[in-house]
Image (cartoon, rainbow, N blue to C red):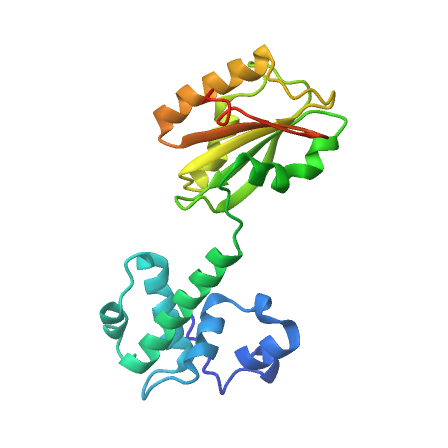
Length: 222
């Protein structure tokens, strides 16, 4: 593996701060972002080398990261380790704050309202974390729904990848009818059974229409 160039050896446009100024923070690699946060290295260890060692720890041990573990990295003192932990915690808080939280079928309707007037049926899955914050919203199927077409594998594959605690399924009725069809009920029952097997809770099935919504949970069908 070739040796890393020090910050001094890098071309001006390749230095993290200059690169951020000219191309934006999104263009920087993880270790470059961390190098900016650190500001400088220590005697015998350039800031880039120090940043790469810290990134390696973040990649392998992020969930249980502590001040003590960071301080085990040679050259990283309490002050800089504290800066890193504080930055991570602040980012987490803002990410959670900005994530929308689903607490009712009305929240689901507000989130998916653009689909309520679609001319074709859209079957959607909202994945949620343990605090009911939205992780992602995906369209799984477009077309007339029936039990054979909406396969549990398609519904739960992304939820498993998202490490979701729960999901909410939803689809629109282009006819405007706010009643659950036999197919709607069958699909819901099937997915409810699968949800128990995979350990990801099916929290609701919300039918969308131009004039409102129908919630399986509110109706006591889940």
